[in-house]
Image (cartoon, rainbow, N blue to C red; front, side, top):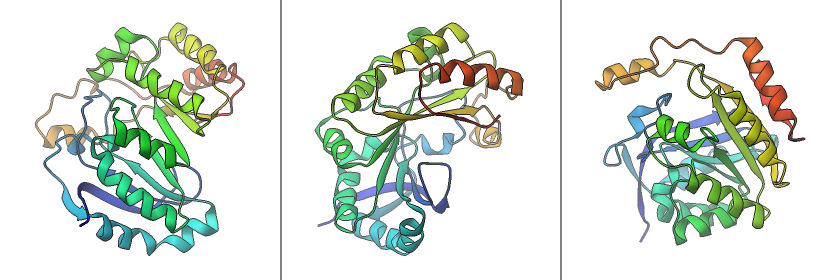
Length: 246
């Protein structure tokens, strides 16, 4: 009998969540409460639409030709996809039988045997490191940094291709000394093939208001090109390829 997962939404033609054209699955539920989250409507675990693994697979394989042509695949994101690791593991095993590439977009906060097995059969992990200063990280997310760094280490030890993602928010995650230390730290991770520097935007602000949530970044502006360029240069000191929307 197939397991049942809770899905927030599906995107059939994703181009910003991993290599190639990707079918993006937004899972419902998240433990973090990031101040700059643009999908707060994914936070509550009991919401969303129920899918069996078979139903989700049937949605995905409709687009296999696009994935094959572009070198893409499926990306599981959210929310925090690892909260439904057992369900995703069942889906992922079937995707591997269909020779479909799998990417996981995660904060690294959740860790258990199902997460470990899911990571082991994934082709790439997009690891979101919200900040390298533990105090700032907790301010930004409401949880500790240590689990994220634990997963980063696991990915290194198991030679799993990893992209690190960093959202630059003026006045919140633009602490340059911490960014420099993160860049130095990543020099020790040959499995990290890319750093994605993402400029803060407020496209999700309306969702906060619709949900009656207190959006603390209403007065925060998007990062200036000069700041993005400065942070990009700091990350490039790691020797890793850096992409940025400069």
